[in-house]
Length: 207
Image (cartoon, rainbow, N blue to C red):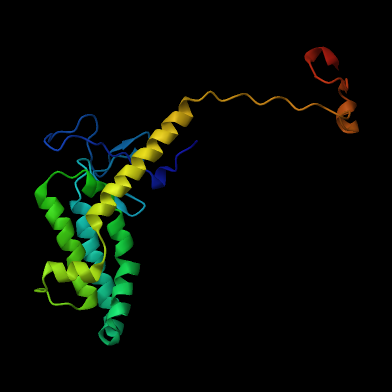
């Protein structure tokens, strides 16, 4: 398998308390075998950092929500409440879903609160709710249990990983060669005379 170097990057994961790089140093021109060494990498829609902190993804969701809201603001102003909620589910919820695994493994209270605040903040923005709307009312209107979904996603990922690990450990049986039922075509038979026996071996070939 050959990597597409223009769409690939090397990102080194390290403990959060460690300030120095283990092996690689990310600079604008740093590469390894022509693959760039980066300090941040976006895989699909998830922004990854060396410490796997969610701040990059959180900032991306906030900026994306403001950008989309600005574009569709004339429509949102005249739309019904259900339509506004649907717009949030279409444009913002898929971005939020990529935070599920990071949230499930995040132990810092600050980031857990920050993620919840961003989810409800973007929902209030699209539905034009007041910023002072109590969280309980917002959660009832949102009808989206992010915490439960994060742990469910983590459990599903663990099951998939174990299933793949067990499949890799199984021995792959070699394919049996097909039996030749007819002689080779005439262009080849002019150079090689091949026997029509059940199993072709080097003894059957006469140059």
